[in-house]
Image (cartoon, helix red, strand yellow):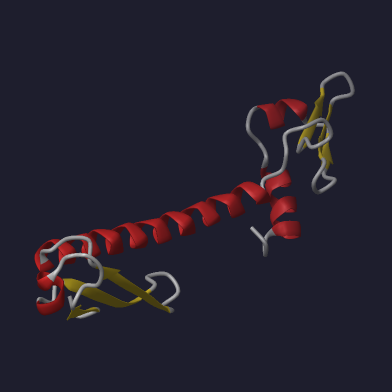
Length: 141
């Protein structure tokens, strides 16, 4: 791919003459763009685990894939946490609407709209409540 640059260099550490004369270590430079924001994403991965340049390349690509996967996973987790944080807790007093059949009253607590047509609301006539909600919160929703 055009967003990956490869460099080879001599490995360091134990290995004797092979380490000193053969360029088996690899350096992978990834220059990509974030798919959502378009901001540049850069990774630098060096691998010199094995005596084979091919194996080191494969290991570097595997590490790059795991880093990109982890980055995407972190973004999705952050999005999910933002959604979860915006949710209201289900607890006493957080209801949206009250249905009081004895007094023949239905009240929307978010907008303050109240009606005495309990049967109509129970049959699905929520237009007054929807209209009031959209008038109050329409720009946010």
